[in-house]
Length: 119
Image 1 (cartoon, helix red, strand yellow):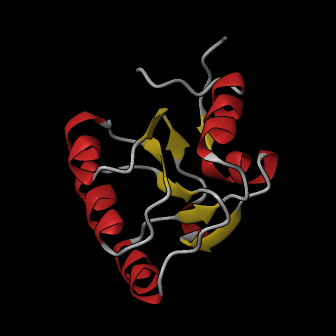
Image 2 (tube, one colour):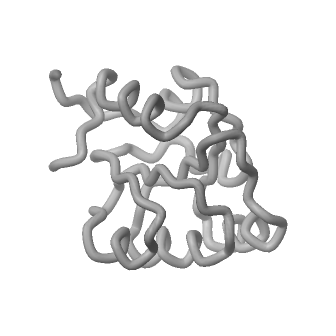
């Protein structure tokens, strides 16, 4: 796999993601990816400009993404963030996208497109 950088807008288009918040930030470059549903794990191990894949949809995901300076969040399995999460994401400038795919399949496709879990 050849590592390459993508803009969020490319990822949205390639993987047919629905943008829930942060359309104005889709020019952000993605340095890599991280997948976890444990907020403490994401805080400890994700890197700046990573795309975060999770099934969580509560407002705390926005706080973690802001703290870690993540490029954005993809919520998987057709799940949608709750209203408070969307509001907070708009306030904090955090792009949230959703995918119909399960985590395993989406992460495999992200990896095949050149996004790795390492810098």
